Length: 74
Image 1 (cartoon, helix red, strand yellow):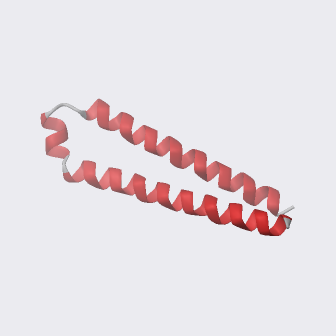
Image 2 (cartoon, rainbow, N blue to C red; image 1 turned 180 degrees about the vertical axis):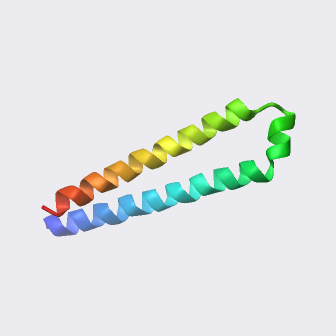
C-alpha cells in the first residue's frame, strides 16, 4: 500500500516538474521572440516578475519531488 501511494505521488510530482519546465521554457522562448515588443512597451519589469513567478513554482515543485525521492529511498 505504501509503495503504491509513493509511486503515485512520484509520478504526479514528476509530471508537475516536467510541466513546470515546459512552462518555463515557453516563457523564455516567447519573451526572446518578442523582445522588440517587450522593449518598445518598456515591460521588462513585468516580464521579469512573470518569469520569477514561473521559476519559483518550478523550484518549489522540484524541491517537493526531491524530498519525496529522498524519503522513499530510505
